[in-house]
Amino acid sequence: MYEVNIMFQMNKLVTLTAILCFMALALSSLSMAQPSSSAKKAEFVVTKGAASSLLTVWFDHETLAFSPQDSNKVGVWHLWQTNNPSFYQVYSEAGYRIEFDRFASQDMQSVLDDLKQLISHGNFVDSHAINAKQFELASLESGLTVQQHMEQWSDYKTYDYADIGDNEADPMLGKLIQQGFIRAL
Image 1: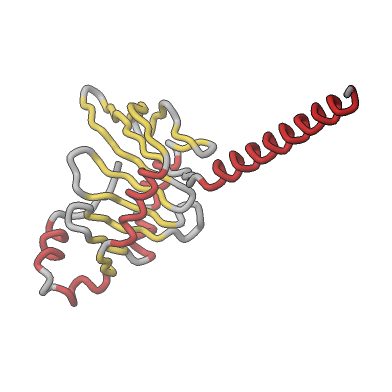
Image 2: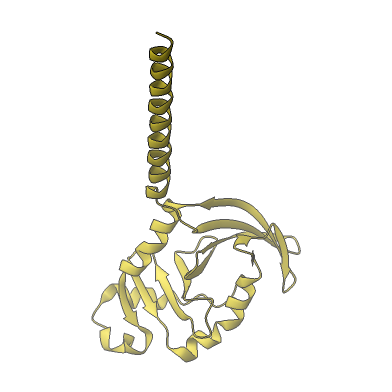
């Protein structure tokens, strides 16, 4: 009887161990299946003297973007960490984006360099001064929702800045061009 009881206890222990191993594997598989994203969106209060405004900034490993307060335009750099990033101006409300040539992109290099100062080790800084303006982090979002928002920009109808004159028949494009382009923070 004693031997039967020991065998029964050992079977329970083996069964319990097998169940725990199965649960651990299932949980690790589940956590690996969850989509993760390094995309971040921040709003900064920008103060110069007595004037304040908001600046929205997005970034992930490939894209860095910004939009001043009350603007329907977003300045976007793709491959922003490389020596030759591509610069776009995105019009989210209209679903358009304009790609600039390398020379225009180089003109925007100082803005890109300023924006890079708001990022440190994969995160936004809490506070930073740039060109006599104080930038204070006001809000921060991260994750899949931010990533999906940024990915939408790639789906917009895209025009090359050099070819805009060839597309004057598109009334929306003409309207967007008249609004001008983002030139500074």
